[in-house]
Amino acid sequence: MKHIIKVIAAAAVLTGLVGCVEETATRTATDHGGTYQNTCANAVASQVGVSANDVVVTKTSISEGNGDRTIYVGVPNATADWVCITDYKGNVKEVYFGGSEGAM
Image (tube, rainbow, N blue to C red):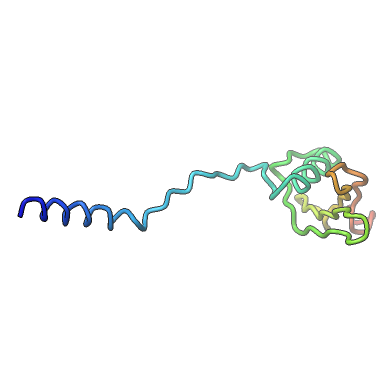
């Protein structure tokens, strides 16, 4: 009888732990979603003179032809996103302001 009670008690404890999941991965302030996004966020931040923590990736698209990535990066107080283009390996090819230069 004692053996059955121990088995039932152990099963009750294990059943309570089944739904427990601990998430240990943390996202840092400078993680913008991936290698291409991080590279472009850093490039844009450097171009405009702000910290990479102050910019945010708003959109990413991939060219089907050559694999280039176009990353749109929001910058504080800018009237439009900055645009960063990388090749398929993640090398920055171009960084420019996506809005009217008069509105920068």
